[in-house]
Image 1: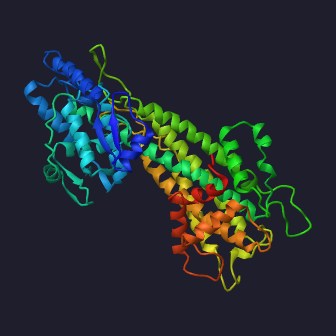
Image 2: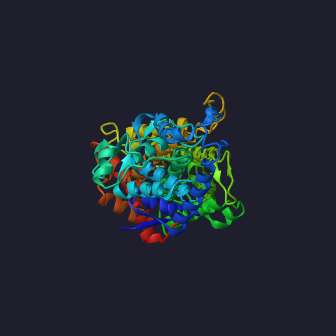
Length: 512
């Protein structure tokens, strides 16, 4: 099994995906263990002094003015975890919790938190055992970190609360730890706070969304090319010299992808009458501009993610010169903004894909295709209601595009008076990504059927390869009405699993 070694300088997106989705094992580097021990010495020295130090010998948040005596500090750390594990609502997905735990471990191993090496090792042990704490949908405001989600994870480290075992069964965490020979940790000064203060949940969901959207943006270029071909559109608008004079990188990449997919097509530029179109509709002609803007948004979001993956997010932090200083690095604004940006871009990509689908089904705008791509219009409804489903998905995505990060609700007796809502931005982005996959699957379903209905004209080799592959995947072609949901589900899986991109790339080579 693949192993990810965590050091002091952060982790990569591929590390997060390997642990969260691939079940990779986690090991601490010798450098990380040494940094943990050195930072802990500083915390222990401060804890022994009579002067109060925030996070070490004081209360937290609005209660930070109280000095806590030594005999109560273990109880203080245990209490902060218990009291902050206040999430409610449905369980969060296993991959999100694994990403959350791994990214908190990443910060702990930086040597800036003051956590003992044995606590970090126990965090790695839980991941390696496949023990996933139960984390709930609601409880994070995206400031002071993803407090409630991280607290539920810390609770499991203490042998409390519930967790999912490697077999998928939810049981008391104490039982699961005992079965895997893992001793619960007894938290000492600063450790409870250090396990809760981070942007790890929203960052993990950002990393996974970026990976999914990478595939979906290439998929959207392919479905747009199929729709252009089915509508007998022109590929002249995809010429690289046209995109070079408006040098947005994403736009050029999308246009190049579409042009590669359409190479040697006999459908582009043809017309069903003697009145050729001067220009295609915006949803066809401007596909690279819209998808390209989304690609450039992805690039910006990836830059933010990379910076955050290299960061140590905690409060207070242990500095190399021995100081332990308070800071505001736990505020989720940088991550929250790009999560919202991506939801906006995804909604617009879905919107333009739906417009192309609707054009394929409308006999007045499809340039000779049968109404709703039906076998016997009137007797058959064809794909009429598939477009309804697509429209419903797009409508929800528009609602999900309303920024969460524009909101803030004060908390902690006005001490935490401005929050990021980054966790909420991440949660709605996950729904948006799922919906975008379904929207593109419906465009794929309609466009492949429409191309096959263009009898006598030969599609591009790449689009022919896509049609063949999607039919082999169980998505049926033109014909009388049938139970449509299974076809749409198969098309969704075809896009979601990357099979659409793989089918096109067998002919085109790697797409951008």
